[in-house]
Image (cartoon, rainbow, N blue to C red):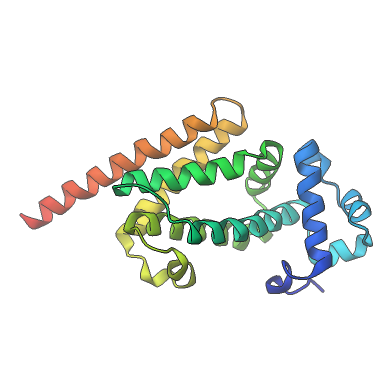
Length: 211
């Protein structure tokens, strides 16, 4: 029986397993995260690992979620800077990109897990993307994203559409970064370009409606 997801990040053995998976991924990438090796280095039985995680990909997604919890506290405590919506969204993705790409082998392992197409990971990926949406809208409004994370109904359809496009651009640019096609600076620049275009489009649409 799988452990309750809500307790996964507070239960000591689970945290040890995830911290070990992160360490192995950062040393050797996706292929280095073998469940048997994780169990051995974390000092737990292999069966203990399987009670908590269905696969390597599931474990890496949980590791991402655990780190996201830590980042979320930082983002909420340290307001994103910027004099306008574009600058605030770029500031957000500068932070997110630096956080993810700061451990490049782990980042590539996580991106590979997300692209694996495992149905069992769908809910976890959706949860991660919903958080990013809330971060984007929080930056857009210049407000704490916490309430938006707790209640997605507070986000308008227009805001959500913008968030989806910005986030999609970020992921596509991260795939290019993962393939070593460009630097992490280019990832953030792509976010700036699409944000500017989307906001200009929304402004033009608002003018049309007013007329």
